[in-house]
Image (cartoon, rainbow, N blue to C red; front, side):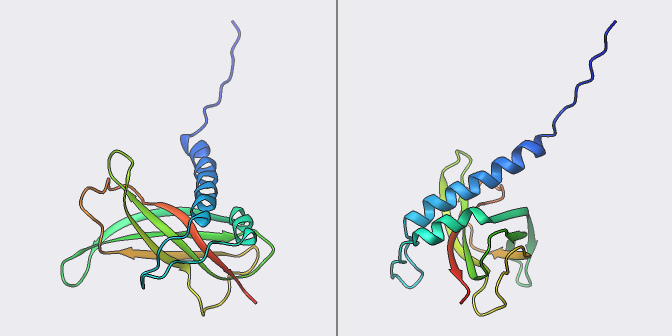
Amino acid sequence: MESFITTRRSPVSVLVPAGVAAVALLGLLYLHHPAPRQDGRALKPATPEVKAYVSNLQLSDVTMQATDNLIGQSVVEVQGRITNSGPRALESVDVYSLFLDIGGHEIARQRLPIVPPKRVALKPGETRTFRLPFDTIPNGWNQAVPRMVIAQIAFAA
C-alpha cells in the first residue's frame, strides 16, 4: 500500500499575502480619489510617484483590542507594524481605517497618521510599530479589524 504525504497549508499562510496585496491595491484606488480633510478643504490627488511607491509599504501584525478609558468609554485600539521596503525615506504616512457593517459595506472612515509628520523619517528597510485609538465608531460596526488603506505618503527631503 502506497502512502502519500500531504501537507496542509495554514489559512494564515494564504490570507496574509492576499491581505497585503489587497491593502496595496486598495491604497492605489484611494490615492486616486482624494477625500475631504477635517477642515473641509479637499486633499490634492496623489502624484504618480506616490501611487507607485505604495506597493513598497507593508502593514503587518495588525491586531485590535478594546479597553475602557478613565471615564468609562470603550476605546478600540488598532496596533500593527509598517515596513518601508522601498528606496526612499518617508516623512509621513497616513492610513484610512475603514469600518464595515456585517454586510461588508463601509459605515465609517477615519484618516490617521501611522508615521506622524515632524518626527524621525521612516527609513528604507525600516519597520515601525503604530497604535491607532478610536473612540467614535458608529453602531452597526461588524466588530472586525478595520480595513487599513494607505491614504497619503510624504517623502522626506
